[in-house]
Structures are given as C-alpha cells and as structure tokens.
Image 1 (spheres, rainbow, N blue to C red):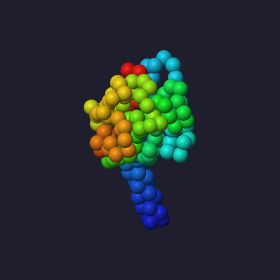
Image 2: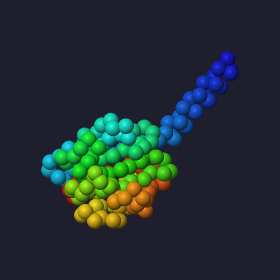
Image 3: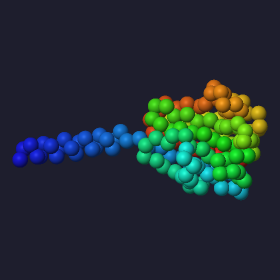
Image 4: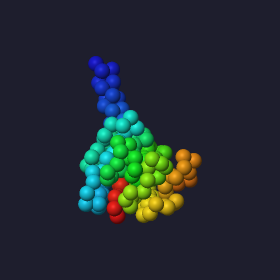
Length: 155
C-alpha cells in the first residue's frame, strides 16, 4: 500500500513539473489595413488562423503569415516567416520572388524578447527582409522560452 501511495505522489509531482515546463506560443495579428484577411499557415500549408490569435502547445516550426490578395502561400505579398521554439525562435520577412512588397508589415516578440522585432515599410527594407535565400543576417532571434509574436499589417 505504501508503494502505491508513494508512486501516486511521484506521478502527480512529475505531471505538475511537466505542465510547468510545457512549451506554448501564441501568434496574434494587428491588421490595420481595413481590408484583407490575415492568414497563418503551417509548413504543410494548413491554415492555422484567419486573423484570430493562434496558440500552440509546443513549437511552431516554419509558419508563414500574410494578408491581402495573395496566393495560397503568400505569393505576390509581403510574407512573414517564423519559427517559435523554446531557445531558438526566429522571425523574418520574405520578399524573395514570388513574394513582393504589398503592405507595410512588422512583427515583434512579446512575453520575452519584448524589444526585438522589425518593421518593413517599403520594398527596400533590407534590415529584416530576405531578398535572396542566403540573406540569413535578417532573421530576428529570440532565445526566451514560450515567447509570443504579434504581426502587424498596414502600420
């Protein structure tokens, strides 16, 4: 009987520790364009959100976001690319063809790395936009666990 109660106590404590250490990220949108629907898509093309906040329990790997009259993968529009993963989050803007500047687009981390982000206000925003696949210097990192991201259109 003592073994069962000790085991139950250890199991309960272990589950509490797992819940405390669980990874979670939220992507929110601030669409100031007045028109257009923000999209958040997974790497496999599934639509995760059409403008509402999206929370995932675990990492969000290789997601894209865009708004406006775009192709299914943001073709013809300003594209935000993000990976939110504890210790190694990274976000950037892609203007690599077939993507092109369409609206002012920005992003910023919150609940960690709160001053990190970038705004792309024109077609030549070299500080945070990829124009070629090897422009890796434009990625904005965040190494804080459970950081969240806000994406703003037409700011």
